Length: 167
Image 1: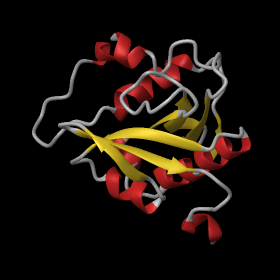
Image 2: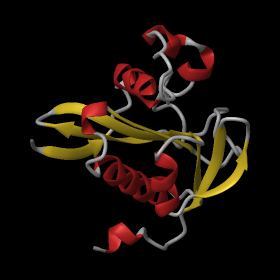
Image 3: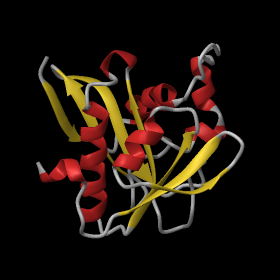
Image 4: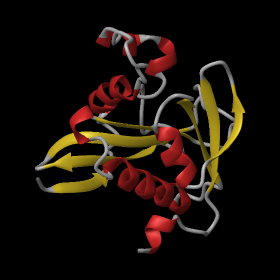
């Protein structure tokens, strides 16, 4: 396994569509939705015309040249939207690659990329029962709101680094 991170390219909409599906949290015992769910307007906004917005950027994790995960951000009216100046973050990995630190590496790279682009903070929505809540909290995200199923979390970008970046 040769894992590497690279920047997401503007024309990789099909790749983003694939990872939008992978990002859908499926509670224990629930049936996975059909792949066509990504064609719904509320999910299509995560990948349609990606690269056109000022915040559109992303990181792809590759194993021997094959994409296995992606993290990306854009300003959009999604589940994690907080305002018109804060990009929303999405992150997904194929199941076989979860729990190996790859998602954390992508998250760190995304936070740095957003800092470089001049953004002050980033937001996301995550299901309350998703184990990723702990990963986001460890990375400095804080819960700023919630609904029945999800937390809305924000990470101030500033100049401070993640603990894992200080290695």
